[in-house]
Image: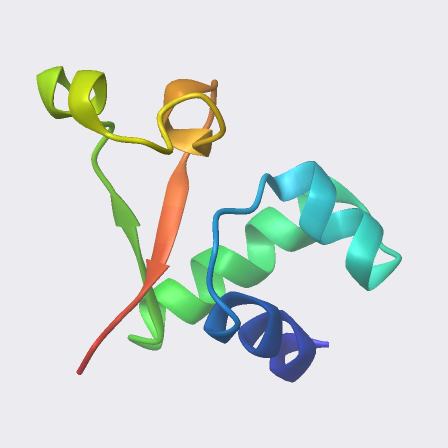
Amino acid sequence: MLERLLEILRAGGTHRVSDLARALDTTPALVEMMLEDLSRAGYVKPVATCTEACASCPLADSCISTQPGKAWTLNPD
């Protein structure tokens, strides 16, 4: 299931934990745990919430960083 989660994240875009849970047919709590595990292993990292830069971003209305909860990104290393 971790591999499938990484595949979804590699495909790009932004994803809410609830959407990832639905795609993986599991619970949001398990997705959060998997993201934390992937973070400890160095595959993903949490990102800070956007600030003023969001005002000029064309994706601001659909970005998860404007919604409650953490946003995650793949670690480029």
